[in-house]
Length: 280
Image (cartoon, rainbow, N blue to C red; front, side, top):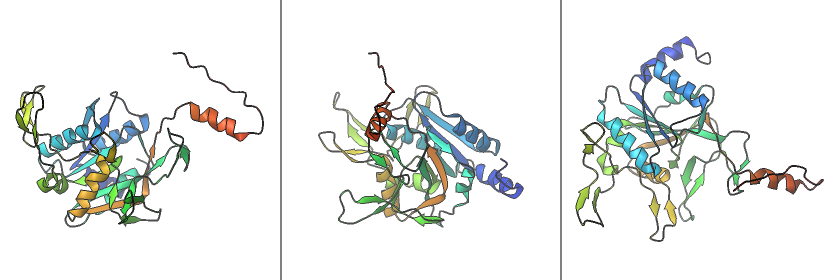
């Protein structure tokens, strides 16, 4: 923790006492930089929750939100979602310094793609490094566009969930929960997923609140992602949604090998000498 002064370490030790860091994983692993960061927050007093190999992503987040709300407010004041492919930059703990206001809200760090400010995504499309902070533009389709980079903290309308801190008041606000009632199409039985259910691993009741949800058209076409939907509804409910431009996490993006060969072939100066063999 050499990047922090002794006064900051004392301050973060106090802040981490009510902090729960939640990391969803797909293969029970994370990068070493994130592991080191989590060890730091743990040594300062934070708690840790992970859910492994659970799809879709919004279901994993709802499970962790329920586990967070099941804890007492004394040890669970704020939830910090961090995706397992995030790379905490120096000073990342300073996201805890951002004030979410009297009612509380969401605070998002800036996420940049590791390896440069512009990269080619899986589909071969350029990606804006400030992809996780958005403003609402009425009449635009889609209605959200990335915010422009600036110094300090900015009020925004929506954000991604790659690295965000959420106040307990937001997650506990049941007006932000979706209607949990549904019909099992196989049995015809009615259920309510906003009520605690039996956790077969512990034989205790487990709350999985319907907070995060992605939206799709009847044919499966994506309409709105679970993170933009959640943060936009939080903003509309009167909570703050803030974006800390100066506190960032790298995004360890994995690319298809084809993009390297395509890039080399596009240079056109001479015939590429590299190649690839893919065995089926």
